Length: 311
Ligand code: UDP
Ligand code: MG
Image (cartoon, rainbow, N blue to C red):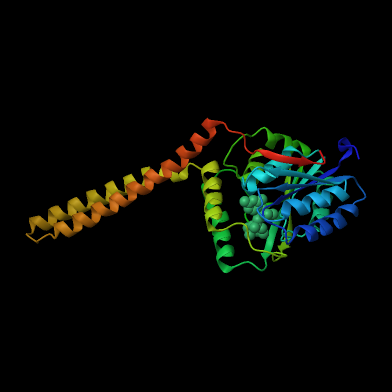
């Protein structure tokens, strides 16, 4: 098939997904065949250490609709989906997790909305099954905190499982940011957006590839990419501390006027330790931003591709 004819591109990031990839392929193929329109499935192997690459290659060999990009190492989920979009040629592009937590059948609903004229159709998680209480609560809090911190309207409880029109994909390609929060960038780009609700299923097999460390990095990228509020905390805290200190000074003055003994030492040392702690937090926050500015200044490519198949 000539790639110029491709209507739908399905981007699937893969990191150590040997246990799910065959089933994911089967389900995706079933759904995409049912559209009766030409499509491509782009597997992006994000430096897997298991048999993911081998299996992906063998699927690629026997199905000409399947394409494969393989990174030289693990670059992370957000970069993997970025590469998939960069190499896609469809008129509509769908990003979907490999573990079948995002049911492939929902793609048909997304296509329907796209045909009605929407440029972005995001999947909204009405319910999350088979995930830990910790994951659910942190996700819930994270999306809401982010919402209060930014002026960009990023819908809550939506992941990267979404359909985007070619023009949105091209706009995304023009954004070269390194520490990417893709779903936020899609909101930032604009165009006509809507959502479809779905129930997030348990992982088909294997374990989450998002340990706490990656979750924290992900949340920090999201917040620093879309909000300066953390930097303002220093200003707000400074003002609050000044006001409190002033009030206390007035209070202490009155106490000394009426000759009440003031327990100054304990108070002063606790107070200054507290302020020191705050200082370090502020420096840390500034460091989070500076580190990211440094990443941009270096201007390294977002990813390095080791192998390509089907392109
Ligand atoms: N993933 C990736 N690179 C990574 C981590 C994850 O490409 O460094 C992929 C993973 O294979 C899956 C998707 O990103 O297709 C989402 O990961 P996962 O399902 O483990 O995250 P969770 O659903 O637990 O948040
Ligand atoms: Mg998952």
